[in-house]
Image 1 (cartoon, one colour):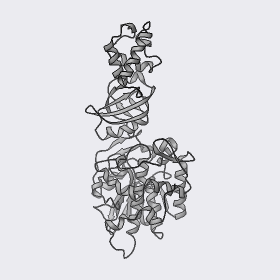
Image 2 (spheres, helix red, strand yellow):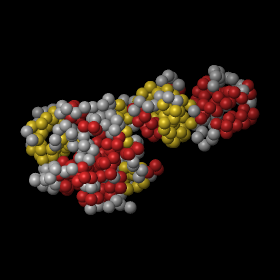
Image 3 (cartoon, helix red, strand yellow):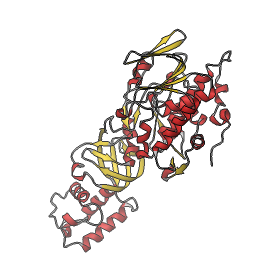
Image 4 (cartoon, one colour):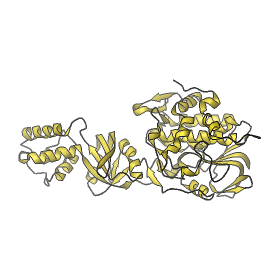
Length: 436
């Protein structure tokens, strides 16, 4: 099979690249090479099956990697407003929810995937499923891609959008890294991100299944580097829940040693102490087994008491000293757990790390090592916070790689310089305005 542009990977970035390369160069033969039986499987799992496809508050600060600034140009070329306008154009009406998260109004991730599939079909983009690319090499002025069954595709340009290693059962098993490495590219260390955090010791095991609502903070060398409010769930191995997923990026970046939980963020330490003092006076007839009942979960209360030096639950409340109350107030405001790492690839939503962005042009997503080779999405060393930021990176980088590859096909074209590419944003190229 021959194609003008072959796109390895039929995920969010790959489908976006295909759509915009075809829109930009309508007579080009575009093919998506997808290893699973259908493209976009991972999209169906995002946002708990609702697909949080972007965020109102996208900025460069939401992205991480050795050089997170690399993402800036793509995010400008195809912004969060562009994403809303593009999907609205395809029939996906937006709903803005807490923290600026944007979902399809239907509440179904399939709405986003169907919109992309219908557009690919309308444009006449070929999709070759069951094609598990295992080799990619330069062949004359183009490339040859072979799969594990001996099939091959020849293409003038190639966009690698094969994803990372997170959630391998949804299609991204890390095979894309070796494809790019075979052409001279280099990869950072890879770590699961946006996932559960493992903690040291056995303190969390008795708390398994308990959910608290409060502040979760990532600490590095004793200093708070990030705090997020929300539901935190205790598991047999550590912590889970939206704030933990968000903070797991700090663990992936090796800048988080401890997680601190503030169980009563509405109250300062002195106010919590006074509440405990009041309870000591009114509940003096009880033992520590029931001292925290009605304030915090009983099992968490047992942990707080033990860390405050009270070993036996039979200890009388009437014998609590002011020092003990201060210690327990401090623990309620700062209940720390030593970080042991993050959960494995099966549970991770994205990959921290990837192919070095220093080896790609941020204005075109083209390789600086191999002419005609592009990359987009999670395979590069860029990952975003939880909340729609990673899908926005997929749309933005896929868009930029797609239009750049399509423009490079044009005969007798002038060499595009950075200034030329700079103004080729979604709105400028396709005459769209962000939907209000």
